[in-house]
Image (cartoon, rainbow, N blue to C red):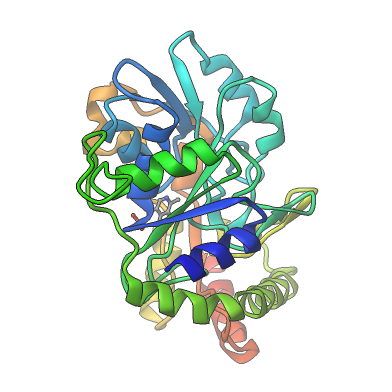
Length: 328
Ligand SMILES: *Cc1c(COP(=O)(O)O)cnc(C)c1O
């Protein structure tokens, strides 16, 4: 386990990596290590996997959702600035779909940045790895991620030795040494078997990410003349790892149904922005609060994307997508 932690820290270019049980725990323990608790507010994007918000709720803090930018669906720094109050204790940008969020703009607000890097293993922004851009980062090695274990796993990355130590103690029953319990912690270990799997797969991650990039380029070429399909583009300065390849179409539900019917494994990430889920109804943020995230939720389709996707498979996907948007 220590070997994997050391290798992953080196890969991300940070001093410390602490393996934990899953990505949600990684986010939660990182928040606790930052001292975020009851009465605090944490700013995060409205269109993320719900775990980002759950981690904030789990530490007793309030998730403060904000809208995203129209082009990349990443947290909008201007919206973050407007949402800052004297209770804001952290900003949690999400590196959605394998992109890197505009972290450098968030750092200027002087509030600790916790990167949710679960979808961005190997991504870079201005040459620096996602996971090394903020004060602390959390990632998930759930099997479906770019670097996936054979079951649940996660990690916290940071240059801050104090944060790393607090995460380590909290994740091991509040115990820096056996049977000495300083704080009420929990059990969130990185399983040794998962660490072995992750070590073996980490050695292949750059290659797999390169194959995803090539697949993304092939999609862009194949889709260039398909009217009615908006393709994703990398933000300037970003080297994305295409965790998901998300296009936008009108009449999405019909298009998705046609793809599914044709045997294409397409999906929606995510159909419901956090504020419109039943779980977060108590935030009392009605439809219309975050227009960009809400409109996108009705237009997005994730096309099949994995390292060994073949050109032939992509041609079929695009052929069916073209037919669906043209209603042929
Ligand atoms: C997968 C994911 C998580 C949570 O990871 P788990 O290991 O499933 O707990 C958190 N945030 C984002 C953006 C994710 O994609």
